[in-house]
Length: 168
Image (cartoon, rainbow, N blue to C red; front, side):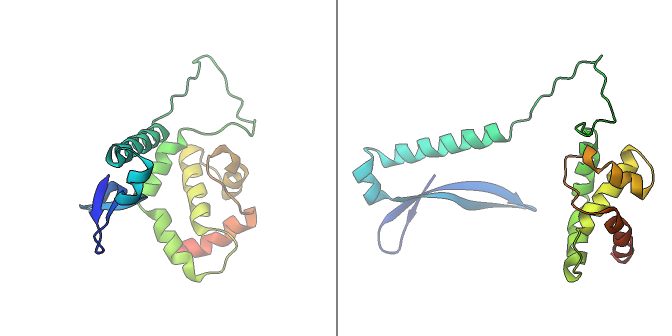
C-alpha cells in the first residue's frame, strides 16, 4: 500500500503490485482506496485498514495461484475412447510451445487475414498431437477433445491453415 501526495495537498491511498517486465521491475495500481481525509471518517485508522485490505488481496491471489494436486491410483485404467479423458502430459509440451512464442508470432502473422479460425489454435493442435500421438492431420482433429484448450475449427480449416503456416 502506498500513500500518494496529490497536487491539491490531499493524500491518496492505493494498493500497488510489483511485476517484472523483461529485465525491469515495474508497479501498477491494483486498487485505489480513496483519499486519506475521507477514509478517516469511515475508519479509525485508515492506514491499518488499507494494509489489512492489501494483505487479504495478497492472500487471495496466492491461494488462486497455488498448484493443484491430482491423485491418480496407479492401478486405475483409463479408457482412451472416452471423450472426457484429457491428456495432462500435453501441458509440458504446451508450456514449451508458449515459451517459444509460437502463438504470439502466429497471431501477429494472422492479423491481416480474415479467416474464421485461429492459425495459432490449429498449429497448437497439430504440434501437440504430433508429440503426444503422431498421426495424420485428420486424426489430430479427431483427437482435439483430449486437450484442455478449445479447438473451434473444422477439419477443413486444418487443411486450409497449412497455407497460412507455410507463409508465417
